[in-house]
Length: 173
Image (cartoon, rainbow, N blue to C red; front, side):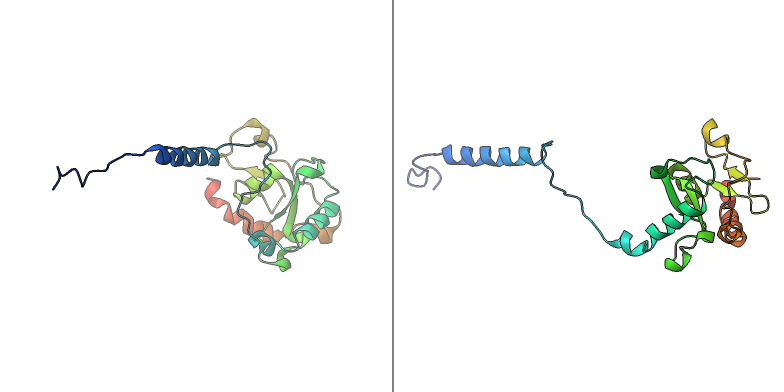
């Protein structure tokens, strides 16, 4: 029976519950706090990139030598900004050959991979898509790219033609 004094608690002790709630609140608040002295790496790492790009270091070194440590488009010689770009996409170590690569400044490598920059295989002139805004990039449009002095290290015309055609949607005529 609800009104029966025997069924009602004799004493209500909320003190332990308050302590537990305070401890839980402190724990939850501390989980989201930034600690500038905490060097714990909480990122999730994968070895996929290593497997996908075997030989990339050697490929870059070969392109650095072939292009005399300069960007093929701008002549930039800041080695830390230079990357090995594949003309035809990477498909294993067999595609890590100098004739399938260009040494490009990192921003131009990105635009090249996005198919917003291409090389005309007939005259080696650089073309920049109209989708790329800004005078900085348009300034190199129409320039002839720098080629390695050794004919055996110059980009494959067939690979450049493939990339040229793959860029077609970003270069309206």
